[in-house]
Image 1 (cartoon, rainbow, N blue to C red):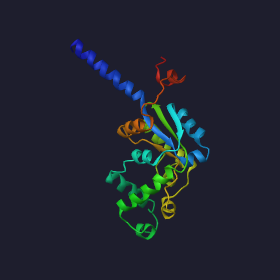
Image 2: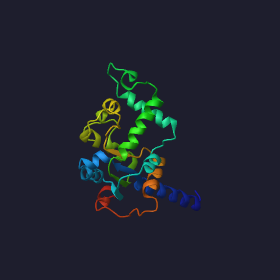
Image 3: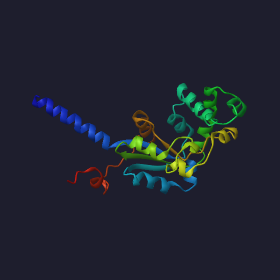
Length: 217
């Protein structure tokens, strides 16, 4: 193999390893998590997993910020949101039409979105950028499934939230599930730019980095 080819290969490999180890994701403690005093517990779980918080702030988001945060113009996403509402009826003898007045997933999603926008403005949130190996997947694993009653014990939602989509939708509100985490790299990039664009994202090392990620033999 030519020397320049080897160098190019090594550079590509080193960049890939660096990107994996320093992947960044956006996550947020929602108003119910803040008001229940769970900020410290949630941050502790993130850090205990070996990830690090490289940016953090508390604010009450504007309607514009919330609307831009979610893909509100994406019909597929809205329909998927409605599908989650319907899935809350799994195993019950009730139909979506009986509970919600419609079984159309797009309409259900639009109703859920209105409640979500109101919910996200109901109090302060804590927005964070988290960095570390496979940070996107790791934070979502720590969070647990979106619907609290489907989240396993040991996850943030499984341990601390008990809400149900049927109750939430009948009461005309969003489900209270404490926490948000980016689903994929594209979403993470968009959300970090939206919430922290132009702001300082810190670069520092953890004392545990050498123990967790360096060869000792």
